Image 1: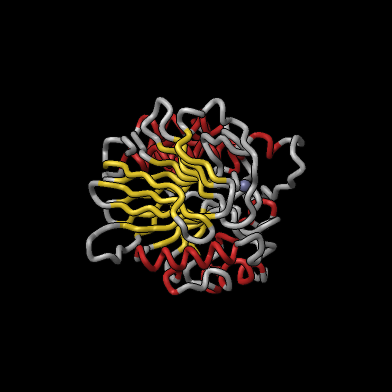
Image 2: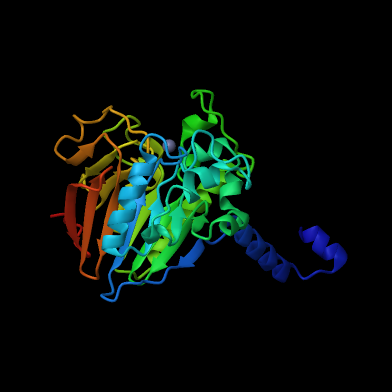
Length: 335
Ligand SMILES: [Zn+2]
């Protein structure tokens, strides 16, 4: 570089600074940031969480959708969070895939659900054209749809960080699974993951929201079929602990579960009961004392937040309450 600069009489220092700036801009793309208005007069922020759902209404998806509509209306929800695996079995084939309408627009038809949906991608979404789910063209088909790889949503005093967890899982990049992935838009996994981690740290640290919640498709801790995601235990959990994140919410395991903090301030919630459910437990003995709730049927979760308190409720396919707990802001103590 120095020789080139000398030969062409280019000042070295400004060029170095320009290169440094350019490389930083490429490597540390900022998270997509979305501002969500709050509807409730009392200033509360209310939302539902559903995961692992897109099966064209089958396996009780339509029944869960109906119950979500009922509860959503009662709670006057502001938005819906999807924890991924939005379209089974292989995501969307493109922006015109009819599965989008068959599994989303024509299923979640209740009035209370005609609000923004914030979705992460799950491993099944990566089987297909994951880029299609991120396309603005899909939002033109249904204005509710908001899906990005990693992004954050600010809703008043609440800040939710959405993480693209699928590329963290090592076995998806080897031949040790039958699943076939389409990684065409993640050409360099190491750089991609390091950016996701860096962006998460930066965004959490720079936020002064009362409630900071992290959402991803894969569980960090789970007693169910898939169990813990080791890569997230090592790479994401320390960030949540260091920043006293009170809740991590995921899908992937097709159940509802609440594992209370294990040497951390974090409550681990699974909402993966949007359609097909599984009966299987792997880590129960390990997390026996900390498992506050486990249900291997379909359902969903509501989260109601005020500046002082969170109320989390788990519902079955009929909208019946199965489990609930409260958290005081900034204490991390469930009660
Ligand atoms: Zn999954």
